Every structure is written in structure tokens, then in C-alpha cells.
Image (cartoon, rainbow, N blue to C red; front, side):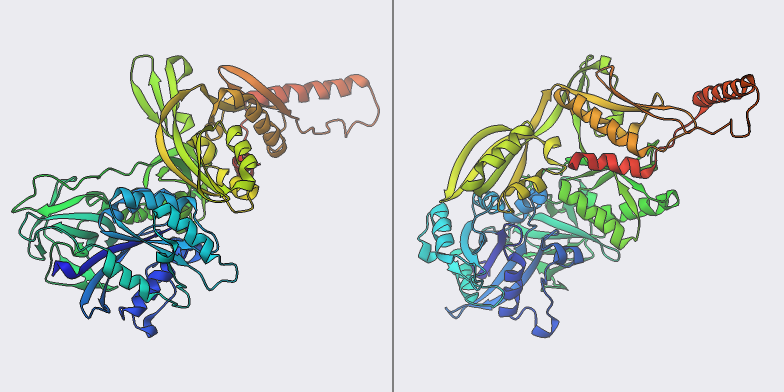
Length: 599
């Protein structure tokens, strides 16, 4: 009965206690028995537990008898907590009618809290504000309730105060969900439309899609059609999450469950797609689908050349579960054979790196992250360049466009100055400011993505003693005076050290790189020139002095002409060696130049 179904999600800033509250709700409703319990039940990956961040969305069905005596079916959809997974959050929100907004009583409102709240309001969800961690000594529940109340336009007394860790007052959250969240709309007899809000790969059942049935009904024997990828399949199994997967005969309008499709890659069942019936298809898909676009690119190389095949297999397996990871082979003079991979953001890249190292036991080298540039050629053709080494010749380029982001920084008002200074140094453009709460300011800027992907977040945290929080969204591609900075060793360009920089920074970055390389490139038997070049001219140069073999060691006195003859012979040898000599750049030199960005 649809009137007794409630679909809701929990949204919060990273580490505000979202997963702990979800655990507490599973215990209260008896969905998970005490003996089966673990910390963060819905976070199945070790990485999620360590970092305190939900990376994969998950869902669970709970049965709850409310104080009004009626039994309700509550579907909780757990959403990812990090800004890199904003698209997955938006799909999860579209699968619900209500959202529980969790705010930490010690931290108050942060950037992600606002970003997720605005997404929930945009999706037209009923928002239930909850203040968590009231058991902590440093908690400020009254102050935070005041802030949250003024943000949502509700009396502070209506904001529910809980301690998810102790289980204090958590039942009030379930009662509020039953009372305030509207039941799902949608007719059982309409053509089937189900929203895919997540998916994962199972080696036995193929791709398992997590779905919310919006209209119509579905049984395990129905053939289904995925509208954006155009694939038709006969499901292997249809079921619900309780919290483990449990097969059921069918799903009806308003239900949340899963469909085991048997498909071999997640690319055929992407997040945001609409599933309909092959026999009686819906006329149009549910709105909001888009293909996730990688924003940050990096080279991944095996530390040992022999591990190339193992790295390829590891990336293939990761891609089965993560459709937003893209990669293609690339070769570098300095690092040999590897892959150029695309990620949703820096956090996504960090997760992939850790998973490769832990789950596949591989030692890998990640190059400095870069962004994709749009290059407009003089002949009118626009191409996307993800690696600086692939940038066409300068004479052919009309303009280079770089991705710009909208960023929101929420900080205590004391740190206004240091943040202004940081963003301005990074070519940021100030837009506006708001005061979501007393003593807290929200600063909105536009800034190039290349300026925030390396160490911007660390710098922001250190300048504000950890109090500031950051949220960002893609804005547009914008043309600017950008050029390729190349490093030449012994007159040979080293592709892996090339970067794309703003014209105003080329000289300083080039000089810093040369100074660093001079210390790290080992001395040869001939002079090695290291140069940096940008805009068709050499902007900085240093020489690594030659090692000298003492050819006069065997001369004990005697005629000076004998010594001159030996020195002349050595000089000719060095000249010949310089013409044919090859300079190997050690791995340490390469890594140190990557760390140059962080200094």
C-alpha cells in the first residue's frame, strides 16, 4: 500500500554522523540484529570506514510500527558525502520524497550542508532538520538549532536533537519521517519507469542496478529496456535491500530495490538512467540524466615496468564498479608505459589510488593532476586536451580555454582576510558574500579548476585552523592567456614534465623547476644543460657540471706537452659523448618536481 511507504535519505557534511545515524535507525527498527552489527553498516568498504566518508550510495528497507499503531515501510537511501560525487547525490535525492538534514552540534552549518540542502530543496523534498552529537562536551545545540531554524524558516524548538552514538532521541527521527515525509505518488497501472540511482558489478549476477520505481510495476519475468543506453535485458533477479539483498517476486510504484541485470559493464546501466518495460515502454525517460564527466586527469604508471599488465587488469576491474573512471594507454619518456586516467575530482583520484594499492597490491606512480583544456585551432576545430604533452603546436592554436569553477567557502568571520588573500593569489574572482549564521560567512568565488586541484584545500584548512569548508561546481570553459611550459634536458623535451600554465606564472614556475632539477639530475661525464621554455623562447637555464676523470694522475712531472695531449684527448671524448649521450632522469627527480606544486 503506497500510503504506508516512506522514501527518504540522510544528507550531511562529511563526518557529521550520517552513517552512525543510519546504523542507529537500522537497530531501532530491528532490521539488523545486535549480534550482526558493525560500525557504519552501510559503508561496506574499508576505505569508507577509515575516512569517515560514504563513497558508494546504498539503500535499505526498514519496517517500523509508528506510535499511531500503523506499520510503515521505510526506504533509506544513503548518499555519498563528498563534493566529487555531487551527481550521484542528485540522483539519490530524486529517488526520495524526504531528506533528513544532519548537522553536527559542535561544527554547525558547513559548505556541504548548504550544498546538499539546496539540492534537496531543488528536488522538492520535505527536509527534516536534525542536530547530532549533542552528547559531546563541546556541543552547542541551542546555537546550532537557531542557525538551522533561521536557514529553513522553522522554529528552533522543532529541530530534533539526537546523539546517534548513544541512541538518544533517535526514535523522534523515525516519527518525524512517518509524519512529515509524503507517501510516493505514481500509478501501478502506468507504463514502468524506474530511476537507477546507483549500480555495482557482481561477478555472478552481472551489473546490479539500485532502482526507485516511480510508476508502473516490475516482476522478475519482465524484459526491461534501459532508455539512455538502449539495452534490452531479461533480469536475473529482482529484490529489496534488508540490508543484504533479498529476492522478491516484484516491485511496485514507490518501491526501492534492485534489479540484477546480468550485464557485463556498468557503462550499459549508468546512474541516472530510466528503466522501462520492453513490452510496454514509457514514452519519455525521467529527467536529469547526464553522463558523468571526468574533471581531473593524471597519469598512472607501474613503479615496476613488469606490472603494466596487472595495472591494466586492476583498472578494468575498478571500471566494472565505477562508470565515472576513464582511462587510456599513454607512454612517457620518463616513466615508460602507463595510463592517462580521468576522475571526477581529487578525492575520487585518491580513492582510486588507494584501491589500486590495497585491493590489487600494486606499487604505482601517479603524476601531478591536470585538467582538460579546450583548444580552439585556427581552422575552427575545437579539441579537448587532457595531457600537456598532447597540446598542438602554438602556431596552430587560436585560443586555449580552461575550466572554471564556482566555489563556496564557509568560514568563521575571523578568517575573512587569509581566505581573500589565498583565493586572489590563485586568480580567483570575488562574487558575493552571505551570512548563513552569526559569526559565519559564506564567500562565493569563481576560480580556475587548475588552481584548486593540487593543494588549495590543504592551504585553506591550514589558514583557517581547520574551520573553513569548501564546495565547488563546474561553471564553464573560459579563454585565457595560457601556454605550455616545457623542460628540456640536453636539448631534448621531457614530455612528462610539461605543464600548461598562465602566462604570468610561466617564468617563476620555470625557474623553480630548473633549480629543483639541477639538484636532482645526476652528474654525467659531460655538461648537461637543463632549460625551461614557454611561448617559443627559453626562459631559464642551469648546467649540471660534468664529472671529471683525472687523466693526469699517471703523469709524474715530465714534459707539459704530454699533459696537454691527454687533456685534449679527454676534451674530444667529452664532445663526442655529449652528441650521443643520453641523460636518464631518475624517478626521484620526477616525483620532486610534482611536489614542487605543494611548496
